[in-house]
Image 1 (tube, helix red, strand yellow):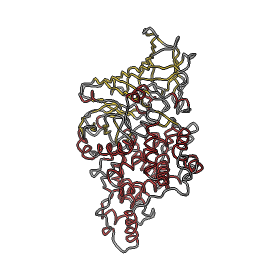
Image 2 (cartoon, one colour):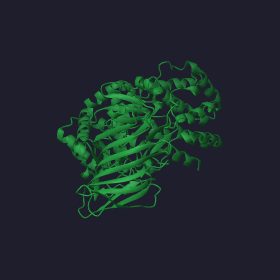
Image 3 (cartoon, one colour):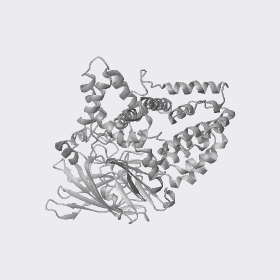
Image 4 (cartoon, helix red, strand yellow):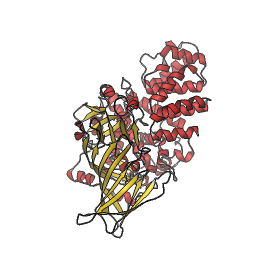
Amino acid sequence: MKITPLFLSLAMAGMCSQAMANAIDQNSYANLNDVITTHLNLDLDVDFADKQLEGFVEHTLEWQNNNSKTLVLDTRDLDIDKVMYQTQNGTWHKAKFSLATRDDVKGSKLTITFKSQAPKVRIYYNSRPEASGLQWLTPEQTASKTHPFMYSQSQAIHARSWIPVQDTPAMRVTYSARIHTPKDIRAVMSADNKDALYKDGDYIFDMPQAISPYLIAIGAGNLEFKAMSHQTGIFAEPTILDASVAEFNDTQAMIDKTNALYGDYAWGRYDLLMLPPSFPFGGMENPRLSFITPTVVAGDKSLVNLIAHELAHSWSGNLVTNATWEDLWLNEGFTSYVENRIMEEVFGRDRAVMEQALDAAGIRAQIKTLDAPDTRLNLKLNGRDPDDAFSSVPYTKGQLFLIYLEEKYGRDKFDAFVKTYFNEFAFKSLTTAQFVTYLKANLIDKYPGIVSMDKVNEWIFAPGLPSDTPNPTSDAFDKVDTATATWLNGDITAAQLPTANWSVHEWLHFLNNLPRDLSQTHMSELDTAYNLTQSTNAERAFAWFMLAVGNGYQPIYPALDKHLTSIGRRKLIVPLYKSLIDNGKKDWAQSVYLKARPGYHPLAHGTIDALFE
């Protein structure tokens, strides 16, 4: 979108009180109706020896209630040293504070009381080694093996484990930071990183646009930088830098195409930080600096839809944000839809439809494993950790809902609606209820007689998938299915399958749709023909291992051991641990997990520990 001077000033000021007034976030203690933070200033030392961040955070406060003198912040496993507040005349004084008993999900409520309404408050603190939002890696656990590495993962409510903050997406805040590291360690943040180009152990950052706290991010390690275009570049350990640049050098084309579809990119630069293999997700859309797993560096650009997804968040999620984690689909459904549109623009319609079809097949399978209430778009957490909201439902059911609307109204009308939606709610947070109101006024009522509000409500509030859910199909997949049937009938050998020009998407469709009781002869024949056990494409290897574990194919286990101990991306390891347990390999899986666990992120620990319990 085009950012006018007035529009940018509103973005920088963090004007989100209207959205906050409509959002009740059960996962935050913050007293937003009394006071909000408009700006954060961090001054932190990165202490690799003690695995902690230590220093202070300064909050600039905007009081909403003239009678309140209390600030309530979210924390989790933080040690609070002291709290100072500034009076109207600029002098600083100690403030009284109390840290409540830790709640398993929400952490500990930090209550700060003032004698008068303070314009600023400083909390001096340190994080702990067990912080859920930070991972500390020894040199041996990194790609370069020479320097330690630390990075954050603040989504959903993990920012509070390294910053005392109003940790809710209902509020937005600008921030600045000064980060101190050993001189041979480079720090980067989800902010303007121009100071990070000079490695000296003392780094200044500024984020002038207001973002929700879960998008505040930091990384520090043996990082080098290489530009890909005038607007894009990559920070990475030297061992993976050149390969990453080659893999993702279409990023500028993705930005240009999205600008044309939905309005100008609002964040200045768009850089990528390549993380160590332990990163538990594919990517994290931290503004200006997406965090990316190395498992998508496949050497053939076959997995770059992940970059399209994280870039799409620059419009959906970062620019227009869910106000609570029960509204996660507003972030992820729109982002998955925009991701696929980007892929179509850059790589063609055939590839985009194949990716739609794979995702649609995935959600149809996963919905069968979920409790019915958890298959609604507008999820009810009922006190659960918001990490529980991250299934394929908000992503793919949300995407299919938007594809449904696109098919009903036509692209011209629907593209105009989405572009106006991003502009209308830019730098704001909104609830599902607010979205429904906007959708009704700007699409449903504007073009009557096409989609009813009953149908909208079925999509958003009812469990499962509606009977008229789009079912994307690919001619390429039809050809794969025909070849598969021919092989299974014994008419051709595995080596005669027409795989020479198969994309990774065709391979995934093939492997995911093979019988789960495939004979050992068939398994061995496939493996011999295509060396699937030694596949270097992480997604294809995962699909093969899932098939092999279910079918009891023993030759995979040395390679599976390596797979599970060398990466920490939850999507590629958690289902394998579950399948191993379900298929009588619990002892083997546990022995591998005990070996791999020190290199996994705390978020992976919680998920996999629960499987073995």
